[in-house]
Image (tube, rainbow, N blue to C red; front, side, top):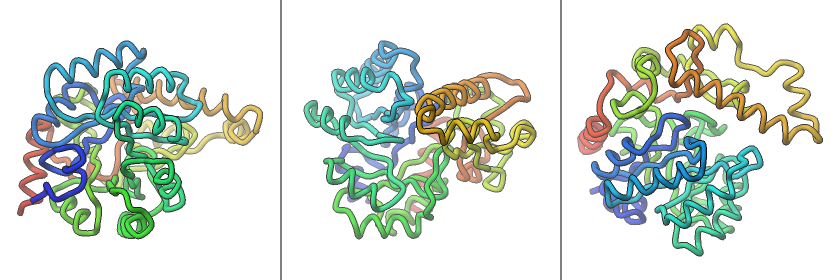
Length: 319
């Protein structure tokens, strides 16, 4: 039934779902299990400290399974390893890139030479048209309900707008937590979906037990935006610690972020400092927790395996 979805045709998968790339959460084992159970998965390149670690991870997945997977690239100047990451992924011939937070022009040009597809995060029609003109293979439509860096538009408006404006496949990202939600997105016109937060509380995820339990115990109403992590609004679980430190940059942070000469360097420093905070939260069990997640944790009721989550999605879709 779902083979008719363009995402299935593009990647030769059984069910039109991308396990979304999640900073410090996505890993090889989760991706291997995603492929074994008929979907695809992507990992942020920044989950690896060096490009050689990234190369090793790609090779390990290929040794374990024969199926499509992707790498998420931050394509702006805050990612100092971008060009090396791009080169290694092309050399290792991954299935696709997901580009975020910058122009994908260089990535698309390089990927085409190596037969690698490029899916681009977009939040509006104007950017979608730009990436299509550059040669993107598909659009990741990041809507208002997405986890991480969300867009401003609800999926009910964004998907129809993009379908009308663009001719390449549209993959909806944000707010989907069950099989019924996938069915609704496909019926709305999406060619596939990207789902992340419901996979945080899985047995294969490398994060702390506290992080997983937070995804079970908190819900959509507990998700808030913070600019403290990367300078760009990012969704996190509103734990007591987040409530204590606040979610807005202070005066000095705002001033540096707006200064034309200092902006690039400040954004890079803020990004790296924020990523360190997330890393500490993901792998420690102290009360100082900054856990990134989206509203779809509302659907997370227990800690399951990746296979069990995917089986539940398929069952809900078919029902």
